Length: 113
Length: 110
Image (cartoon, rainbow over the protein chains, first blue to last red):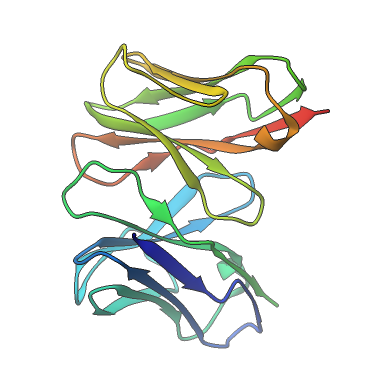
């Protein structure tokens, strides 16, 4: 069966520090991978998605970047965090080209102080 | 512009009091509509996919229905463990990315 792992669960970082959040998927190959951010009381905002190794599409220009160094690994990064980067970050996957619901990771609560 | 609106923002019910959550959408064409449940501090959990008007799906106390403009998530005789935020998302024909509603926070009081 397929599983998705996302870590860390919580993170408190000072303004100006770097960020690296990692997401891995097991039990499938060539998944579509997604990074979302969720602000309190608001819908999910798509940040990045990837349909293959090294292929990254950005939906919202901002202080973040994403990379996919391996087929089932998706990394969200920042060189210098801003206060506005605080939020709940979710990784998700689904089979390529299929109309299936996304499967989400457990999320990372990022607080920038 | 493709858009998804969920109502109400929050709904408080007594245990056993049935009700419905609404998800209205405006898209040029619909590939599918998805319902998710999200518990506090957790990732959303997939519930249903609906593809065409008139389709219905059920899971325990939940039933999702779809028309050409909206979807309803009916909850029958809810229990406190049904308390969560329920998210709706649509996949328009224009691309494969989902458009999300802001969610309805459901609180079931014992």
